[in-house]
Length: 505
Image 1 (cartoon, rainbow, N blue to C red):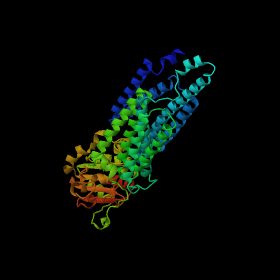
Image 2: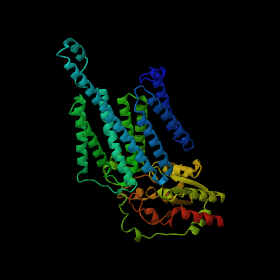
Image 3: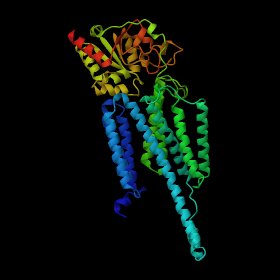
Image 4: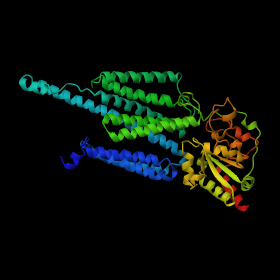
């Protein structure tokens, strides 16, 4: 054995040190990612940590099949790079769901592979035992010495079996659930809740079946003709459970579901790390699992709903309509010229961005409008709701892309107290996160949800294509407020018209 291979034995000190360096960089990268000014550097630091972990693992003694490994790395790198370059900002949540699903699927396959390793070991031992029995007739003494060291079956250690089962079940659920979330956000399937009659009961039975199967495999941990089909059956049942849990959830709740499934993937990775005795995988999976859980809880809190309500209520249908009487309610509209005049004579303006801004790719034009207003002495800030867009931080990233100064981005709790003293609020593509029904209508599904309280401002301009309901399918009472004026049209074109009018004033 060469000195390098000896140094990179799985239990060597060098491997332990490299893994410690790797997950330390993960932690530093996550910390750097909490602020827009350091997020890019944080991504690079975490990427270096991952590179160290991958290279260290590939250099471990016993790693083989280099052709398949190199081919997989090349294909994955090319597909990932092309997809990342081509994806639109509005499609980022779908991409996150897809990547997360691939991670969960990979963990499920790793768990299956680890189990297959023990199956193969059992076959080898059975062959050796059979071989020793052939010598029984002629070499009784030799057979005794050989036979006492081998068994006809292999038993999976409990400390390996339990995390392997956990990684397989949770990884499979995450893979299939994430694929459903991707399909709903990408509108490949309808966004409204879908499911079989008695879906919750079916899901409960599937979960019970997984629990029973896991207990059977853990108690009878010998690799035999019964355990292998049972393991595969659990893999299939977990897939059905992943589909059964996510299909009945509406498209508007998919960002929260994606965050939860991301946490599941992290936990399954940590479990796989325990089964494989890989420190870096354990720590990385735990980081993803814990951060995903925190994010899920934060998003649920931002909508004033519990995670259980999101998973089991069936709320969030994108086709819920917005009420048949919305066109009959009186509202006020104005053109871009009138909007420009109102903005130019304001002392303070707060811009509230939403998913419509992302769809229109209007962030750069909005920055131009803000610059024109600041030239006229107007104070401009941006109000960011925690769940504006389709994922947390969606608006922050979008505006950072347009070089909007970070100190102008105000979180909901920070900006709300300032809104009563704000002359004009400009709502661009945001809908549900500005709906006053969350404060006033106890019958509304979003009642109690914290919102950007734009109705407290002196005047409100809403830039929108039409009077249609938002992603949650709920009519927005803000549109009919006496302070509100609707400016209809594509967000980018409308803002550009306002910029032109501001330049003429």
